[in-house]
Image 1 (spheres, one colour):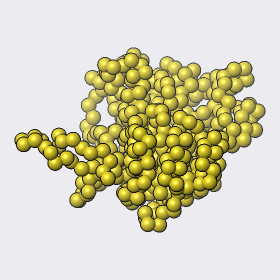
Image 2: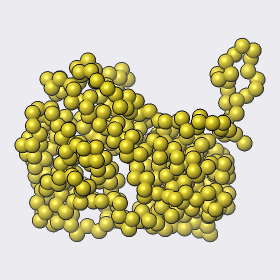
Image 3: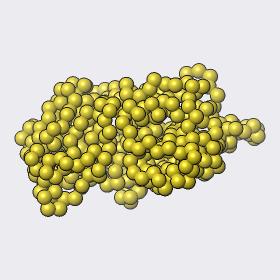
Image 4: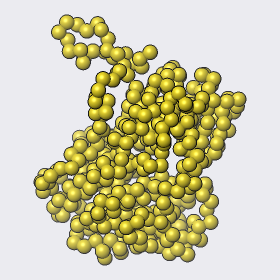
Length: 423
């Protein structure tokens, strides 16, 4: 299988495994690991991106624009400064040159029509519009998607898009959900609950919608220290409780890992519909319980009562934080190991791409119907969005909630009313 991976006109694709690196662009990290998963599975992977990009071993890199122009526009930017995404004037010419280069390379090396995959994130439409190959957005966590072939990072975000588009009737068969692949070697080792330090952790952008103020208020209610780390101005939040709060700034992977390993819990009370919330996966991989909102991507990553608590009210957040020690750090790690490892995620992408390559080429421009694909001879990952909960049923486990005993005679006990948040 030939897979083109389009980088970004505004930044270089870099190796995210550098523990001292401060990377403020999660999309480049996601693309880098996607390319590695695919090349490790034996596929031909061609990365089209900015000069100076560092791609995984075995991936071919092709420059997508002039290094001289890129350095004039973006090369002097500090690592923590926001990217300029304007496409006016010189920036617009640079972006259009990048789009033209992407098209040139795909047209020249893509082979027969609809025989190659073009994998992209936050696609620049002039680069991909009407390309005679299969264009796939491979990990959507942003507001607007354009390709008929889409991979979302959560069902929650897929459904959010369906609602925005007024697509209540469904029939978008080639939109899929594939979990985020995580480099588990970069997180841990797990610290047992008895050895945890006495602080809560917030690791996000310092913004109201990210729920930073809620997290500080919870810590203040419990008179427990809290450490804030991430990009932005934390002073409005720290000022509410200066005695116990500490802002650690934006941190390298090495620093973040140690904070996640040691914290009693990660507080992620995001106030908007979070497309995924990758920090929750990183925390659980480090053995850190997660206390999150009860909507958005957290509903698929945080297993309520087993790897953390999902909350809707301040009272619930306080209860959950007080009971963070009920969550086993080793269960948190095992959950992510089982569901977000590269072998599982890579196989899911591979099967999805194979299903697209079986489509009849003539149907692709108008959007494929589910009857247009040839049948598969075998299936590796039939449930791409399937979460493997079997670890919770391998043996006797205390449930996170209790079933009420006032079930009527003859009524199915499983249909009973459940208490919210045991305790």
